[in-house]
Every structure is written in structure tokens, then in C-alpha cells.
Image 1 (cartoon, rainbow, N blue to C red):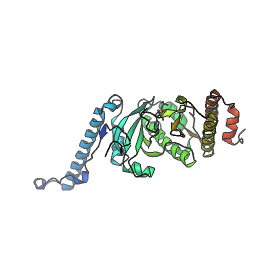
Image 2: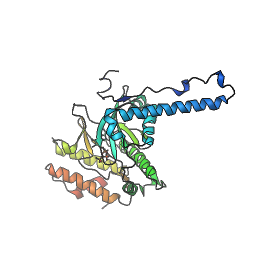
Image 3: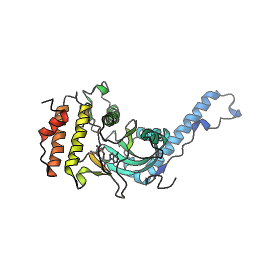
Image 4: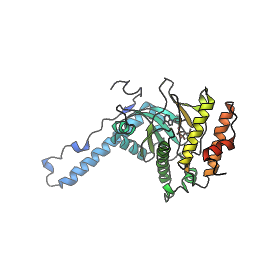
Length: 306
Ligand SMILES: Nc1ncnc2c1ncn2[C@@H]1O[C@H](COP(=O)(O)OP(=O)(O)OP(=O)(O)O)[C@@H](O)[C@H]1O
């Protein structure tokens, strides 16, 4: 496949996985041993070997080197599964190293193309939450009271896994409500695969609203407040909305980072919504618009909550 077909994704680790069903049978000299067990053992050993090779390859890949040291074996297991299931074909470089998650570009596989309903392999974003770095007490606060995640217990890894499933579910719900968000592709344990944003202009990472000159703030504000209204009508509050979580994708504005988004039933949803309105209104005030926090809140809620 040419570099262009790869959508400019710089390949650092590619995987040609052995089909474990094709592993040779043990041979006649083992006839006194239970053949079924031996076959199963061989397959298991072969899988272990493949997985170790996969892990070493990722760990050795130049652009993964620093961050890979903080991933546990279960994270490598999740990446391995995503490769096997056709969601990822090859890893690109890091896009962002955040407090709790790292985001990488990657070349999606067949299943990713199917999910996005396109013919060619798409570039995808792979968001990997670091179980150990995550502030799971804080995460817990956003999960409690959300009926979708009742009874998840207090184990750190369970909380992070629920968080990632929540981000995936929130992206789906937002998308169905007509809010432009990255299209979710797959979730596995603490790893989320989604549409990669940012038209490749050679500058790398997609630009946030905070980083661009907003040519037409009136239109941008109308788009953002309509997104907020649709999200609210779909029963969601973003909870961390600002010019830092709105990305410019070509001519489009795209809302990202829906991990902490809560349903309107959450006990703090009103506070989160007021904060979102304040952040958004403040940004557009700095762009010269006469925008009040309360007017935005009334628009988003349809004025029926005051
Ligand atoms: N789908 C995507 N396509 C392209 N870039 C993305 C995508 N999702 C996230 N990013 C990039 O990664 C950065 C971090 O993503 P995000 O805000 O979702 O993670 P985070 O861990 O909450 O980050 P932070 O700790 O900085 O808040 C974004 O600012 C953006 O530059």
C-alpha cells in the first residue's frame, strides 16, 4: 500500500498476525498423549508467542518508546485484540500526551473502514487511558448517579474501563443527536478507537478553537450553541466544554473529549452545564460578541428549566 493510500499515516509498527488455526499438528511421535489437549496447548503457546512479539514490537517502536513504558500488559492485550479484530492495522505517532490518556494516530483496518462506511483504510485516533495515572476518585464522581454504569464497584481498572465505555456511548449518543463529534469505532478495555480529526496540512495535530483565528465568530457561536442544545435534548451535558475541546476539522467544528459528559439526571449536571455555558460565552465575548452566560443557558435548555 502506498504512503498516500495510508493517508500519510507514518507507520511505526505493522502486524502480520499468524492465523493460529493454521498451526501444524503435533505429529505421530506424540500419539500416546491426548492430542486434543496438545493441540490446544500449542495454540495457546503460539498465541502467547505472537502476543509477546506484538508487545516487544510496540515497545521498540521509536514513537512509542517513552509512553509505552507506562502501559501495562493488559493495555498491550487490548491493542493486540483491536489489531486482530481489524480496527487497527498500523500505529502512527503520538498526537497528545494528556494527564490521563495518550492519543495516537493509527491506520485503521477493515473493521474501521466498515464502521465509517468507507472503502479505503481510514486514519484513526487511538486514545489510551493509563490505568495508573487516572484520577479514578474524580472519575468515580462522574460515573456515580449515571444509571448506565450502576454497580461498577471500586476497582481502579473497572472504573477506568467504565469511563472509556462511557466515552464511547456518549460519542454515539451525541452523534445520533446531530452533534459533530469524532465517530466512535471501537472500545476495548482502556482503549478507544475513533475517527481521526484534522485535515492533514502538514502541521500535525488538529487545531483547537483556542488556537485559531476565528474568522466569523457569530457563525461559530451559533454552531456551538446549537451543539449544546442538541446534546442537552439528548439528555447529555458535556461537563468540560470550552475552546480547548472544540476542534477545527476543515470547515467543521467538532466537539471532543466526552469521557466526563454526564446525563441530565446526574446530581451535578446543572452545575456542569452552567460552567460549560460560562466557558463558551466567555470565549465568544473575547471574540467581540455580546453573549451572556444566562442567555446561552436559556437557549440550551429551551428556557424551560429556569
Ligand atoms: N479524534 C481525534 N482526532 C484527532 N485528534 C484528537 C482526537 N481526539 C483527541 N485528539 C487530540 O488529543 C488531544 C487530547 O484529547 P482529549 O482532550 O480527548 O484527551 P484528554 O486526555 O482529556 O486530554 P487533556 O488531559 O489534555 O484534557 C486533543 O486536544 C486533540 O489535540
